[in-house]
Length: 254
Image (cartoon, rainbow, N blue to C red; front, top):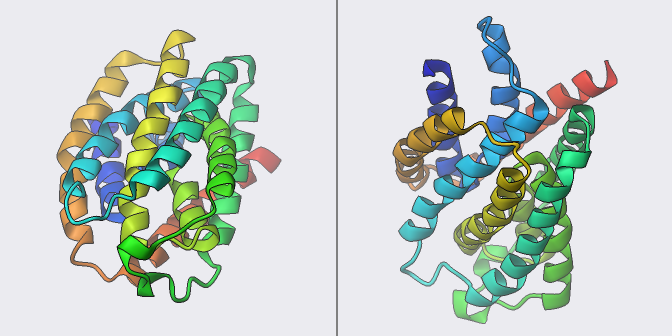
């Protein structure tokens, strides 16, 4: 219980600081750390189920914190949120038919794509006023649906992919991306959580411990993130994603 709480606390602090749901961090931590301490290891199905429920609660505080100041782009949230909700439910429900290795493979692919996108230059996106932001609505919907399916399978909400997509492809300003992605992530996590719960993939005690840890740590991380340079935050996120992708792929190819 202590190890699970610490995983939830550290992961949620980092995710709160970077404006993501945190599954990119907590999925590998839950998968590998308990066994390092000689404790019972979680299966990929159990890890994805716990992650799905935890992300649902971790993103609520972030959305609440950004509700004022014009950071939330309602059109973006509507188009991407509705698509990712459908996709995440399909992925979460359908993942029961997949093996643990297949779930890890999907996670590895998502992490690899996210890592590559984090290194694409993002110039001039923060020069646009929030009320002047425009984006390709059909493209946003299709990308959100694809992200939702993949994220639903691994119990993530897809923020680690949504953030680079919104920055690089849709050209959304950084602060609006962080705030809006948390709202879309919250919607996505509803679909993946329902999919995981209805197919019996959730261990409720570890999930409850992770929820408590995330509700404490996420606001602390968010406050810390406000004091750190945006470029530094992007570098930290890129390093975490690349490291995770390398570890997952080493295990897949072993």
